[in-house]
Image 1 (cartoon, helix red, strand yellow):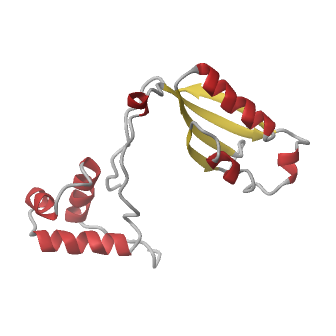
Image 2: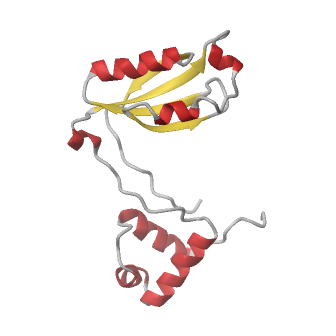
Length: 157
């Protein structure tokens, strides 16, 4: 086992499951679920945070409630001979953060350079994102999200 790998017992996994269901649960509430005292839960969570297993707590945003029901995943592939293809593969990442409607981006290996996730109110706004990707030197393949099953729970293998 690598030195940096964290060993979790059944109780740790139960704590993670409780946090995934509601990261705002109190230590007491989690303790009642997993059979520990609040201080014991707090210590286990602190250990998982310090070891880098738990990296943060974030809200889950329902973009449809914000009037952005069009949800798409877009593959990014550099056009051969484009200016972007001549730059470092990381140089396009800062540009993506500036584009309204992009909610997530990934730099990947394989046939594509990256993927972006978008949420927009209209197809015209989605088209504007695709035009911007073209201007940055990317060919795109767009897939519309029809149904989101939500985040898959983290469980022991």
